[in-house]
Amino acid sequence: HRPSLSRPGRPRRHAGPVRVYLPLTLSGLADLHAAGQLGPAPLAAHAVTERLRRDWDGGDDEELEYAALMAAAFDSLVALEASGATPRRVVVAAEVDDADVTVGDDETAVQVGVVVPLGRCQAVHVDDPDAEDDVRAALAAGFPAARVYPQSRRLAESHPNEVRIAFDGDAVL
Image 1 (cartoon, rainbow, N blue to C red):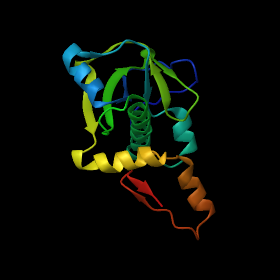
Image 2 (cartoon, one colour; image 1 turned 120 degrees about the vertical axis):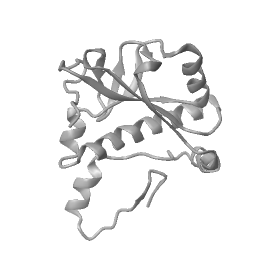
Image 3 (cartoon, rainbow, N blue to C red; image 1 turned 90 degrees about the horizontal axis):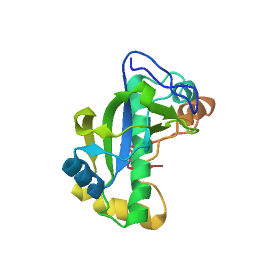
């Protein structure tokens, strides 16, 4: 069970790191490799927060981490649209100290108040080159290629006759 953050605007201290998901583009990933760090601070990111746990009642750690990852993937998509960069979403998962994280107003939004060294980066999630056409199409249509809404589980329970289908974060019907 990973610790999660609470109290918007103020970090909650505990013993241990917090996993954050940092949205990038391919050029941002190249910058991370060249500089050996992500910065300058503050860095917009996503994480499992107390609000996410409350809003997604009954969600296990894997589901909550996936929601934070997909929120960062959405922000990567926004960065792609603004920059015109190669249409492949990039998200870096890093472990940072809880004291260096400030919770935002969104279910997953946080700010990392320090530069994140490459050594704290645990994983890199990058769209496959085969997904470039799908990402371009999503950008052209004005739709994010992936977005997870924590309220979906609660809505599904209150509407048992509806079918909700999601395909690996790439499409929602």
